Image (tube, rainbow, N blue to C red; front, side, top):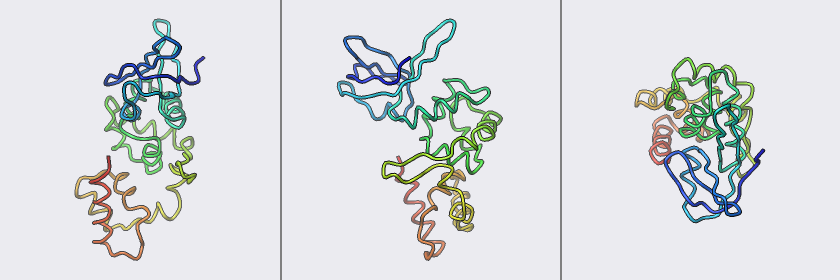
Length: 201
């Protein structure tokens, strides 16, 4: 019914925002990632999803089409409702979630509020062939497809083990190590990876 809303942000709360369009303010539930990008008074476009239930109509709004697409894929997973999908996308960007799915990292997914181990494993099982790729702003493919192949399968094992020992999740560690110059020795890779991990938003 609604594809998108464009208007001024008139209100922002912890889990929702209101956008005024033609004199009507639409309340949209959203993710922490989207809410961090908006400020009251600014003009934005939200890509929307309308959930229709017997007792309620709920509107969800997202800052990007990619986040909306990922939300739709999440709520198609058995046992995942809009609340759980928002929780997941409040912890992860779509690209980060695709990485977790590609690496089978259920532990990281359980960081989302209300998502237990079994539900995280079901997400991996049902999404592994769906979260194929997300384009980055520069046109480069990211997500499950981008982390397949040798670059993903053969990280520096000693550097990976060191990061895991420091308490980082597997997906975080692999993402930090991916793309580092292979000519670097292990201590240098660990240092650069830690710099990325400690400066990440």
